[in-house]
View 1 (spheres, rainbow, N blue to C red):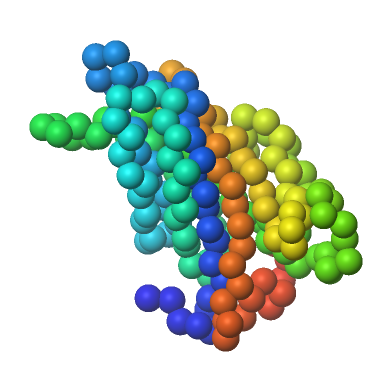
View 2 (view 1 turned 90 degrees about the horizontal axis):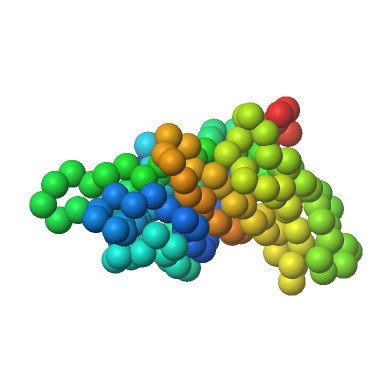
Length: 176
């Protein structure tokens, strides 16, 4: 259990959709997403018979260490056997948290606060941008799944301040 002294805030992960996911049943799959950070584990609902599922589901993680990677795994739900792995991806929120630490109160809506390029050390399928929208800092990510023949998952990150916790400004900036 996380104490308020350790808690920086909450990360809302909006799991938007899957794109061209792997087929694990006869012609389709019944995918769901599991998100893990440390010992925390959250999961979306199952979308039946769809390799391009739209979840539009929010998962919320309490954050104590913004340097800890977040792991995402897609599974195919099976009624009578173990669920099949449909690939995984990993991302971090270092650039997102650094953007949150900026003094962005007077920035215009739509201001890009940070950019993260795809590379060997991340699972990004394309450039990811941290942007200020309607007073909120948001990051859209398109993650290419690993250990599978195909598939991507689209997410959006949003920070939720929690009254009484230490917030993002109390932690020294991590180096990438």
